[in-house]
Image (cartoon, rainbow, N blue to C red):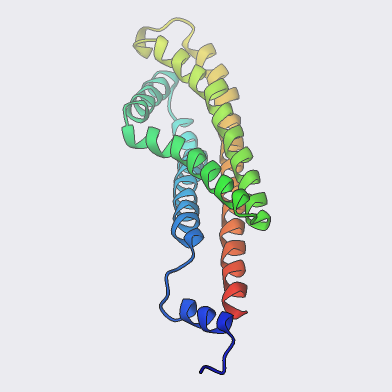
Amino acid sequence: MSHYPPHAASCSAGRHGGAPPARDRVTVPLLVASVLCTGLMAGLFFAYDISVMPGLAELDDAAYAAAMQRFNAAIDGSPLFGLVFLAALGLTVAAAIVAFRRKRRAVALPLNVAAVCYLLALVLTVAVNLPLNADLSALGDPASAQNLHAVIDDFKSVWVPANVFRTLLCVLSLGALCAALLRHGKADSSVELR
């Protein structure tokens, strides 16, 4: 007959080779995937802020327009970009739902913040950046476009600051996701120590 209470034996079995809790098979992969996708988007927007747009600003209007048209066409034609762009939000929302259903409010709260921040970046992209990209594409060949200087000045004055805001929103989202991942890890550690 064992001298240990039944619950102690089951805890010991779970700690030393038993099946991991279901949340570890669902929540952790969702959190990690969310961090990776959001990090990729933050990095893309940040790269535009610190290298692409300052570099383009050194070009004349026709070269600036032609380069942006090519960049936009490459991104619009990339299925990988579309997948990561939308998956960042979808994975974060899914992770928030799982955390909320499992009553992990300390994890769900930063996930909600991350989802809202990323959603705002997505709305900004659809409402501001994409229409400006479409206007630039509608110019056709920049070498023969009418009022090119005015169009490029308008483009720069809105697109560039909007992209800075997209970067900040994605960085805030990424920070909140990292906080959720850390809180999830701390909660699991405390369960194992009981």
